[in-house]
Length: 482
Image (cartoon, rainbow, N blue to C red; front, side):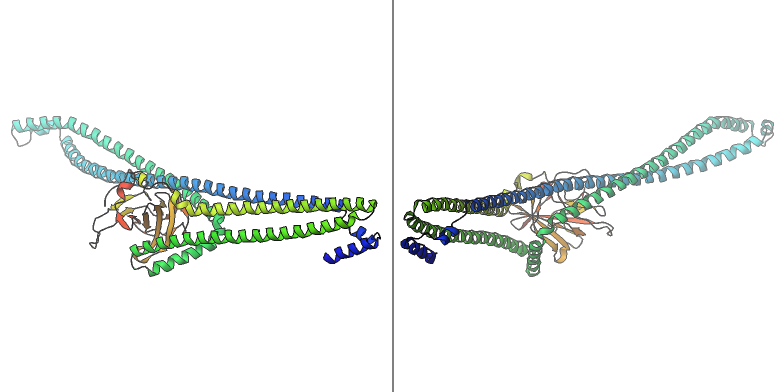
């Protein structure tokens, strides 16, 4: 540009009108066309950005709806499991009653058979023959009186026997109806399980994008689990890992922010230098053009106006693009800060005492503080469940550990905040991953199908120390002690 400026000055000093300078002057029509192209590109960028934000909101809303559907489906499955257990218990009682009634009916029938046989033998003997019997008249009269008194009693016994037969028939009909109700409830429970499986698969498909980070986090958790000497050390290491993740996220956000600010400052300085150079060149060209004739001044004025319009359009486009980048960066930073601060916005765990649902429907077969069959004091509850029973999260929280751990088998640890953790063990399958946010009532796994009597172990810890979980759980109808 400096050589071009020197050439223009030499031509002006020579007093000639340079056709080269006239040809290199900006075209107003081309500048206007360039301005429209830049504006179109800017509108397209904004539209694409709005579409991305809209899709993000739609995915978030869909995940929320799926989570609500899963909570409702899990609740329906647990209610069907509880109803099925009650119906099966009632069926067992009806079967016991049927056996008792059938035995009593058999005994009554045997008694009646003996009495009717005796009466039949007496009926074969005519009344006159009784007089000829080798016995006293008093005995003969007494036998006739006893025979006459026995007939009404036999008739009443026959009526009672008929009532027993009718009652046994009704009892068997009740057993048949009870079996039909059990079959219908089992079909409905199977449908709820299928619906819950479909919702879980849909949720897993939506969350597929975050699997890479989840798998890395799970690998770190498995390594920590292998190194931990006991469960307390595992919880301490998990807390340290969580703090480390928060620190790394904060450092990453700060580094990205500093890099963006440095890049923006460099771009701004470069643009200012370019604008200053362009301004100096334009001022030199303007000084040279002022020495030309009136015709050249009009042409150069028009060219300068077109050039200024293009520069303004470029500056506005760059400013708009920078604003769009800043908005995207601010949204990403806000999302990361919200994700980092999310554990602190968790609902209060202390206020949930006595209101949390049981993680699975069933009977309490082992209580906190009781010794087990080998004499070890239990640090939690043991709930006997149905085969394939649904397991849910008792309170809002975040998955801190998910996987096999020593003698626990498959172990799920949920962090609730305020120093509280829930431990669930004994499941055949876990449907939650490390770092996943859980809502109260959201399904997290299922019990085994092949076990004769599945049992879910529930442990509640505060600051790493076991506490009795029973006062925190709401009462259920068939809660009992084994």
